[in-house]
Image 1 (cartoon, rainbow, N blue to C red):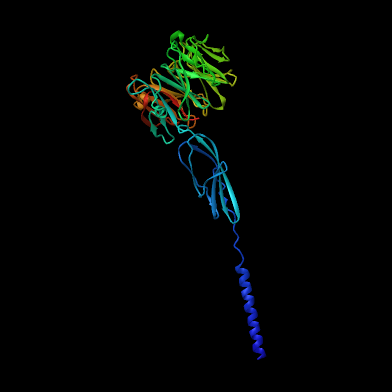
Image 2: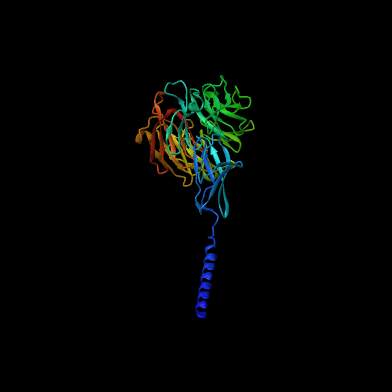
Amino acid sequence: MKQHTQMKTSASYFLMLALLLATVFGCKKEKINPVSFADDINTSVRAKAQEPLELKPQMTGTATAYEWLEDGKVVGTQSSYIFTKQDRGDYELTFKATNKAGTTTLTYKIKVVGKYADGILLVSNTNANGNAADISYLDEKEKLTPNVFSLENNGTKLPLNTMSAFRYSNQLYITSSGTPNVQVVDDETLKLANIEISNSSVRSITYFATTDGKTGYVVGGTGSRRGLYAVDLTAKTIAGTLLTGTASAALIPIKTYNNAYLTPVLKKLVSVKDGVLQTLFTYPENIAGIVKTSNKQVWMGISKGSSANAKMVRLNENLEVQETIDLPSELLLNQNGEMISADGINEFIYWQETETGEIYRFNATTKKTELFAYPSKNDGAGFLTAWKVHPRTGELYVIDAKSTSDSLPSDLLIYSLDKKLRKKIANVGYQVKDVVFPK
């Protein structure tokens, strides 16, 4: 009997010990870690106004609650958030993921840009009816939307004979020989600003440039009266007399460099700064233009003379001559019509020989010149009105207006660096005169 009692007591002891251990181990809590985010999450985001952007950060771990905050206010409580803004600007959005271990925070800095900030603008000289002008838009996927200027301005169109668009800060200054001569629009939304400038006594206004957004110059007039005319953007006036020393200035865009305006005047290259004109160079032949390539190199083109080849002249940052390269003897590089173009990120300079329609390329590193494209012979082009280099890709964008007739729509030809026609986009506007790339 005693032995039976002892066995019963031992069994009860082991049973109690087992229950105690089960209780101890059963009460041991599983360790929970805070939510963590992937290291490669891009928190500096660019978005377009009026277009939804989904933010869905990749997380490790399980959260029990989420919060999206803007300016301290909760705007969402899910693991993702659709961000949309009507106005461009800089915004900050904070995401919080919470579980029993605590709260983990992720902050997005979002730059909202206008709907036309990342594409290409194609500025027409006229329209199908020959009574106004407009702008077409080529987005990042090269989808074309015509007449976006009038779309964004309640049907208001640009004046007939619109010629060019010059970007300064966040604005485009659009010039026309029609009225008004200069209009200012937002470069990302294309909304008109309350700045319109005209001078009925200055004919054939083509190009504009400014270095401060307060004053500037237009190329206006014809023949010996063509030159630089001062513009006061505050008073909204264009001077009625040309700047002394600029008579017979080249019919090409004004170059701005180190807060000065540079333009060829026949055989001279002149600089205008603070209203003071200075002649930098005088050559036996006309100066065709001036461009900037990579490594802060500045190059000046000199037309062919009766006994001398056309030339490319390299200048340093102080606009001092460093070297002169003769071009092949058959090239003319005339001053008006064969505008030279470069993109500032590589070594190539382009121009058209209007006598043949050929486009040539000069390599500022190797100093070699080559035939780059022959649009009229090989690609069905009729009459080229503009050619510019894309500053991000280095590709050459060429406008084929087909003829001098205003009634035919222009085509866009895109040439890659390997000299091949990569793409042709039809009907991008009428007599397109300028191509504006994103900043």
